[in-house]
Each structure stands twice: as structure tokens, then as C-alpha cells.
Image: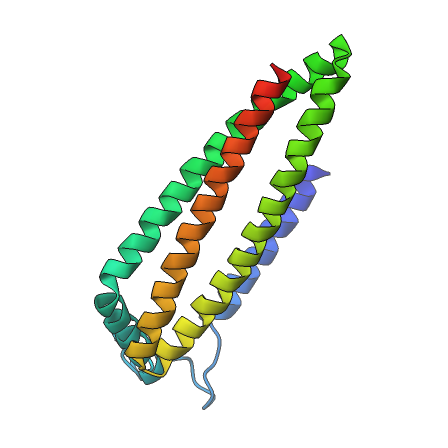
Length: 181
């Protein structure tokens, strides 16, 4: 059955390829590919304008973009630390439950409430970053680089605040680890 299905599929593929080779053009004759030579670097005007504008913006905001990338790297390393601490807390939480250490669990729960507040603040900052980035893109699109610079500097400031909040969260996670240890 599999062989029959395979042969059938191969036959259909060959039929479609052969049909494409012998297809007729719009004037009733076989297609002539020499009608319009293919140019490799030929792009529509709008796409070229967008690429040029993007290049200008990258050139104009090179230092700011590097700073944003540095902040992104820092944030990712902080998030790695958080994941490692969550893993440690998981083991300590299981151990505390097995040992019946209710007081430590209650203290840890209180610290977790503080972490939830920090998470809400981070979420709000990330919303503001999205708004500023959108405004930045619009200003670049309109070639208003002065206003765009204000927006990108605001993004840098907000990303720095996010990293500070994540650092506070790491401190609270360390506190939970100390409580459960």
C-alpha cells in the first residue's frame, strides 16, 4: 500500500513539473523567459526607501542601540540568576514542607507578596517600553530624529529601571533562600 501511494505521489509530481514546462504564455505561445531579463538588485522603490531610512536611523542611533543591547544582555543574565534561585527555592520548599517548618513557609510567603508587587511594576515598565519604542519607530518613519532620540533615551531609562527591579527581585529571592535554609 505504501509503495502504491509513493508511486502515485511521484507520478503527480512529475505531471505537475511537465505541465509547468509546457505551459503557454498569455499570448498563446510558450513562455519566453528572455522577454524581461531578471535583475538581481532590482527592488521596488518603497522597499529601497525603507531600507535607506532604516540605515540612516541605525547610523544616527548607533550608540543608543548598543546601550539597549547591553541592557538586554544584563537583563538576560539577571533572569538566568532568577531561574537558578527558583530551582534552589523549589528544593528548599519541598524540604521545609517535609520537615513541617510552617513558620519558615509563612515568612517566605510574605516575601513572595513583595516579589509579586515588583513583578507588577516590571510589567508596567515593559508596557511603557513598548509604547516608547512604537513612538520611536513612528518618529523615525517621519524622519523626526530629534523626537526619536528622546523616545530612545526614554527606552534606555526604562530598561535600566527594569534591570534595577529585577535586581531587587533577586535580593528578595535570596531572602527566601535564607528563610527556608
